[in-house]
Image (cartoon, rainbow, N blue to C red; front, side):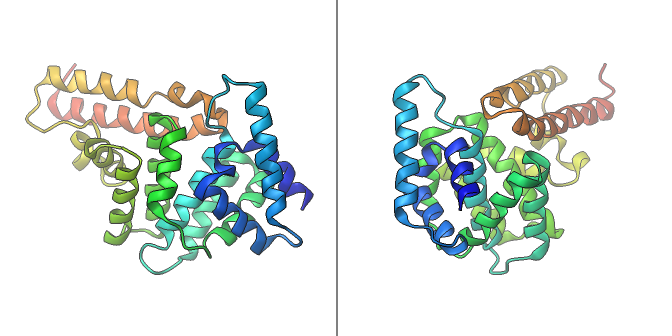
Length: 253
């Protein structure tokens, strides 16, 4: 159990408490021998001590984002009533890509416990919303669509679950549709990605691109660490490709 408590203590903050903390406790109890509620309480106290020592500390750590993604991923994966191995593999590969094999192994071991737990989507999202920046929440949504599409298709049930998560996270309809469009044919969805209509003028297209590039710039989530900036860069590049697609279509300079 030592590697787990070291992993928890080093990287987690707000997710040690509240409904997410309860999910972590259940998951750890189901996958780690000799784990008790006292262990997570000890980690919560350690986190509170660190906060008192660093009152200006950012609320969300890389580990908090990691756990939030695991919990929300479990909700999306179970949305269509079938836990697909391709989706599980996608989650594992994403975590290996983000955090390396050792940290990903810890995360995925915990994930196996999380998927067994019934989770209140609303309560979990409220906790995330209260501690995580808007830019970080947008990044969470982007990962969730990637997980949903890992089996080759995003089902209506998965879209509805992600839409509900989006609403609870206070992500507006335009941002939801923009991120959703990134996982479909680029040429057909370029305007949706930039959150504009096809009737927009060239000037409005340029203005929309500048606005979206600013919103999705990787530096917006730099507090989460370099591992998450990589995922943000992918989203940022999609924005640029959508803009280039529209420019080519219109013959814009």
